[in-house]
Length: 74
Figure 1 (tube, rainbow, N blue to C red):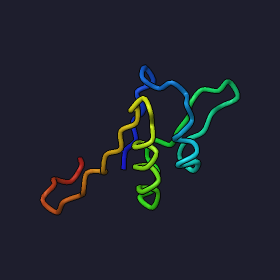
Figure 2 (figure 1 turned 90 degrees about the vertical axis):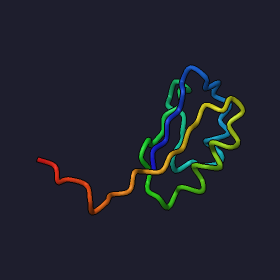
Figure 3 (figure 1 turned 180 degrees about the vertical axis):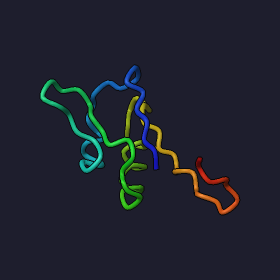
């Protein structure tokens, strides 16, 4: 999974921190910090955090699935 936060939209309400403290937190200067690629076990919490964000600044997308047809990296 990939998490993106539009920091131009984020208003530091902190609802994401309450919904998914394993993913989101504030640093010592009250700026939002987050794990952009948390494990899939946290998908539900990450989606809830995105849903409760009043600014709609959080996007959660699934990681692209590896396929057998994909060419090998050089």
